Image (cartoon, rainbow, N blue to C red; front, side, top):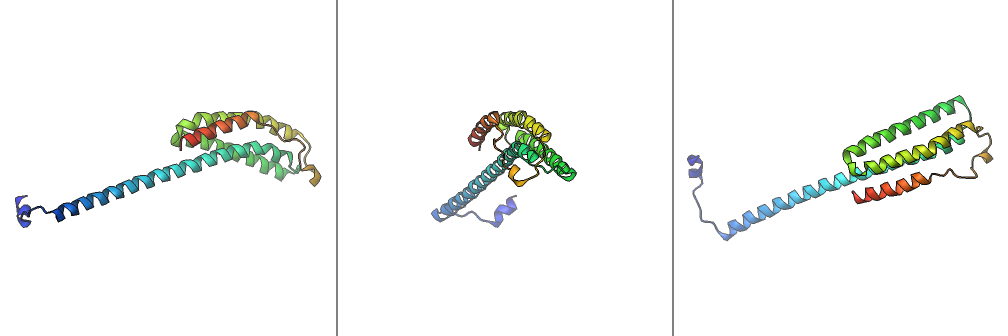
Length: 166
């Protein structure tokens, strides 16, 4: 090791040398802070996308009774609708697991939202399947919207929790 030191004879420390070292340390600190900030922003962005997808899956489930009610009655339409509802159920399960990993603080609220949506939209879908299929364009608008007050309240609560946990 001493042979290495002999290659570089000691020189007196000058203010220029101190300034150079300080500038290098400052630059390295700025790079590290920039990296940490970027990493935090990416994590927030990924969480926001997960939140939006999770809420969209619940909205799709709440929309399903309308789609069932407006079906045409064909076998292909029945297959497409059941596949669509099955895909929504799969996304609800996916986002429950995903939120358990990336945002466990909002999982309980999301589970309550999913439970409320299923308890309200499930019976509405069953009733819609029992109704006659849509035959004319004038039958498409429904006179009364499907109510889901429990899901609306749970959505507000989970949205507040998501905002509090960016």
